[in-house]
Amino acid sequence: MKKRTTTTDAVEILHREFIANDREMGALVQAARADADIAERIRELREKAGLTQRQLAALVKTTSSAISRLEGADYHGHSLSMLHRIAAALGRRVKIEFVQTKRSA
Image 1 (cartoon, helix red, strand yellow):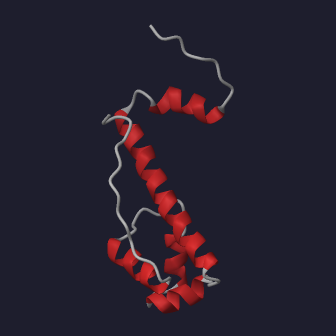
Image 2 (cartoon, rainbow, N blue to C red; image 1 turned 45 degrees about the vertical axis):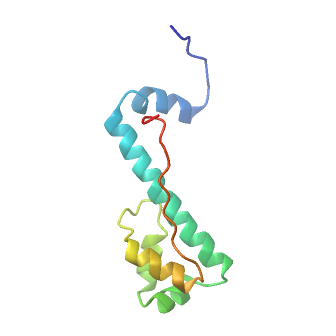
């Protein structure tokens, strides 16, 4: 049996206690991370382009509150069509990649 190492890392402790042996919780955490990654990337690209949320909204033909929601880490309604519109407004394209997860290895 493999001995567990001692840690004071709060994230590691929470992972061990609540996620590591719970597939459903693991899937929820993975989905939340994906949503947060998308939101962060939208914000980073917008800021790199020197645009405000209002300016990006005008380019995408939506509202600044919609852009604000899309940039929120807890938002989980990112549609592919909206991501394509944002990418086009920022001179980018959407690239989808399927990567192997630890569980499916």
